[in-house]
Image (tube, rainbow, N blue to C red; front, top):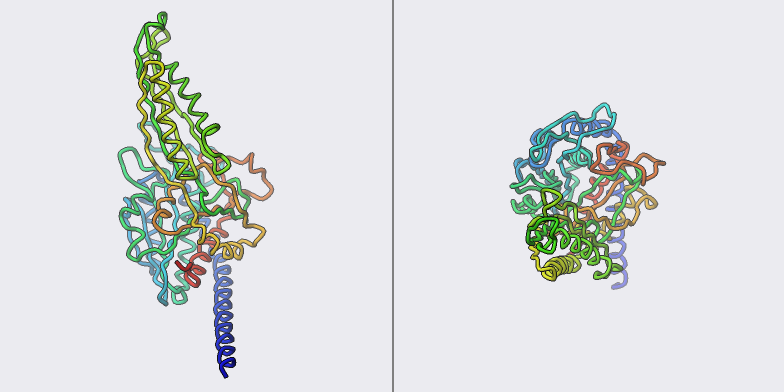
Length: 438
């Protein structure tokens, strides 16, 4: 009798699991059909946003477009989050966890150079210079894809076992000088609370990844981004009498050469990559004057927090001691900007079957880490998160020859947007149906 009851219980659980799987598969099929139906609309949204780009913390019209669309779907909307951000809250018909989906909204001070009929002609003033404004990183596609996912998920709200929070984030590229912005400010203002988010997902279009392909990586997937400034102070003299000076230009040259050995000789490079780059150096006013001071600025990129701390320590020591050895001084300032974009290992593994369902297993590629930075990392510091790349390169092209992100010729094949819409919708549905156990 006991064996019979146990067998009945096992069969009942199996039947329930099979029913849940069948229901999820049916919902996936309906998501796919709806993604087909709204693909043209998603592309139209993208083109409109592309033609009317707005810089960081200035995404007013973009935010209005998003808010209007979410309200039309009956989604609760919050505006003015972190200045221009928009948050939509879709409560499902059944209780459950909260999953967040994020898209960034801002464009770049880049003058578009391609011949697209919807190319940006917008110009503005940035850092006291007249510049063009362009969606040269694909944020226009991110907004359009999340708007599409919101439309699909809103049609299935009664079936959702929990809540979906749609986060449209401003200033991913960095707030203007003297302002706060981006994911960091959204977190400070409570975007991950009320209701509290259990997991967050974000996707980024990639111009060098073929349409239909998806790339992912557990743990460190994009680098932290820190800025440094080194101010070398010496003693000014006539250029004809260098022995009367303490030459900050020569000292700076020695510092620049030596800090390159931090990565090549002082870090465990088999663990993770790192970069130290000097991007600008200024000193002096004419050929026959050795100046008193030289200033250089640069960037530090790391994929591991321990290595990040090591680079900071070694940079300070190298610059100050080289200067001291020449009778000069070096002041080193390091500013932390963006943490490592760290994909939660267990959550990545938990959602990998979803990625393989939506794109097909052969099209889901384990990628190498990227030394570019992404402020999605601020969300991941607070809750488990996964950040993915979806293909935007036309099939058959050479990835090494396509225009890179942040350049005037940047191009995205819009046939890749549908995969992004489906991916966002699948991630939300599958997580709510089968949340990761803490």
